[in-house]
Image: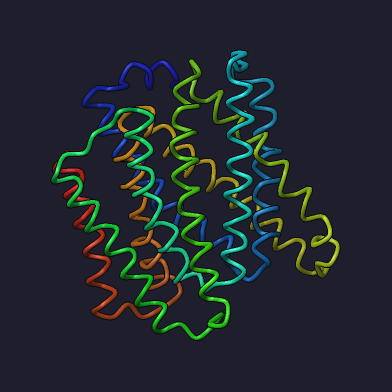
Length: 299
């Protein structure tokens, strides 16, 4: 698989594969966000997910994939620190604001910063039509957040700080996307980066949430662990897909296409949870989708 991926980097086939991977990551990221914001404390949900994917990744990192080159160790250290900051901000956001409001803000601010970062780090340049598509997509996402904010009844008292934290979290999404794209390109085998990243990234949050685990009712431990294992596999395919997409094609475009996750999140709420969509939300979702199509067509 590694040889195949290396053979299509920078080709038309690689572009098509990157497009499919980015959209696949979008679907899974919507599911991942819902898993963390579910009925449990977001800190504990994240801890269960991180512990699960760290333990599952360990044997692959240690015994299956090629070991990292020496130059990769400081890169891994930077990635772990960046993701710690991101996850702390995300958990703080989810504990203060309604998911339907803060999630679109995180996903709407992220691609703008990522496109700028990819231009600085990788020298990527967007065509005018791509900027128009990006503006349409981001406008739809933030419009969706504003519409949800007007109609949400929970967490109103903490919504202002939650929105500020959501914007900061979106900035960290851009930082980790750009940095990790650099990291996965720095190693010969992309699966080496992924396996070692998941193993190392699964350590911090479970350790710092020990006190919260001790306060958890016994009856909730098994459901939370099940959520953690499910979230681990969702994370593997979601994060792995977007990282492979950034290796195969441009970082900025892959990151923007991933943010169609807000559309999939709304569709999950409608089809699975029975939430009403209505004409305004449907129009904003269409705006996001059209922006993504324009991005792809103009590129």
